[in-house]
Image 1 (tube, rainbow, N blue to C red):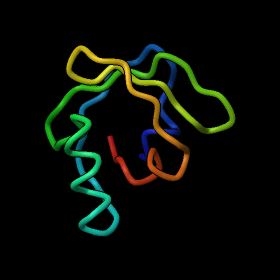
Image 2 (tube, rainbow, N blue to C red):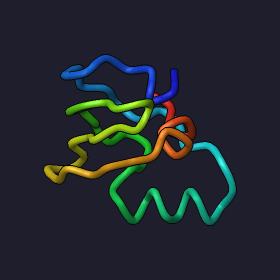
Image 3 (cartoon, one colour):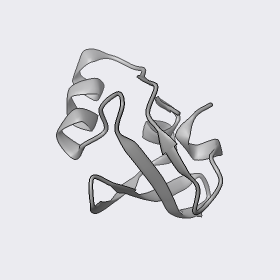
Length: 69
């Protein structure tokens, strides 16, 4: 399921990153790589703030839709 559909407070493992190569590279630089654990801190209108590798990162709903957990 896409990251923006995950429950708040639930820890998930990234299974796949979709999208074009530049989007994958951008997300990888933020710490979103396959096998990493992510936890949704809060969600506002589909946009999410997540804890990934000990850092809080805000991701738009479009980007979160490309991260599958």
